[in-house]
Image 1 (cartoon, rainbow, N blue to C red):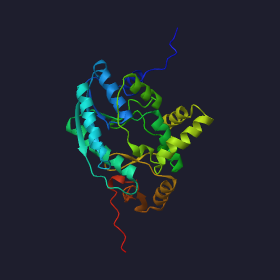
Image 2: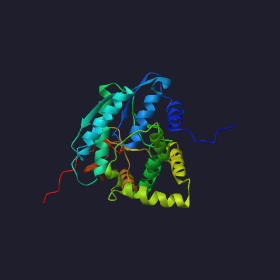
Image 3: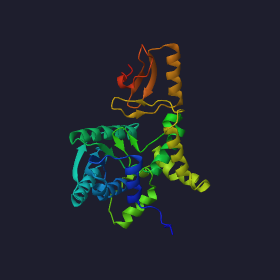
Image 4: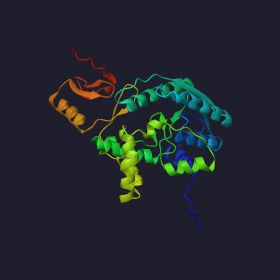
Amino acid sequence: MASSHPPTLITLASRALREDLALPSGAKLLVATSGGSDSTALLHVLSLLAKKCSFSLAAHGVDHGLRPEASAELDQVATFCGSLGVAFSRTVLQVAPGGNLQARARDARRAALTTAAARISATFIATAHHADDRAETVLLRLLRGSGPAGLAVLPAQNGLFIRPLFRARKSDIVAHLQRHRLTFAHDPSNDNPRFLRTQVRHELMPLLERLSPQIAGHLCALADALGSSDLAEPEFTDERGVALVLNRAQRMLVRRARALGQRSARVSLPGGRELSLDPVTLEPLLAAARPRRPRRP
């Protein structure tokens, strides 16, 4: 008789590594960890699977310089890594407070992780994104007017970055933490209602789940379908290869510039940059996007 128990987080991660990622034997993974619940669970799970799945493991934490508690939290991560026999390193940044803070911090973190991975010749960078993160991100992109490409969010792999927990729910992570009595840090910014993601997580998702209990799975299935669909427009990337999702108005500006043969679409991007177009092919060149000059008073 088949078991009625849901798969454990270890099983879900093992399945993702084997089936969705086809992780090669001998791969070296750099785990992005902050000391929070999700990355603590990921680090622990991967440490348990490393020998069985024939990969090696290291961990890296990024202190954005935004919270004084972050340094002590990474000290706890270092201790935890020591107990697991996992090498740990960290990067300390100074992300200036201000507008678009979460996006700027995310970009700085990805750049730091990419540098750390190159330093140890890591095959992949493993992040702790899970199914609830994916569902929330689909909703965020819808609210911002993203097209099909923008909704194909957080796949199992995106270049150097892999997501072994992308099929797991937050409840699976909580159960793993409780089962193994793992301690973790809590970042209060995750509950700050001024961030749109926080409102989606604590207000919109609970409402949708009351209307449709399987909504998270439906949104993830939509992301998967669009990720493999010809309907999706090509994603644009910045100079680090990180996807930049344009909203509907920005995509229309790009199309109009292409149609008119313009050399500049004048599309504002995160970080105060603008989109430029190749004057010959009229293809978007975000790798060449330069910071905008401040307006003269």
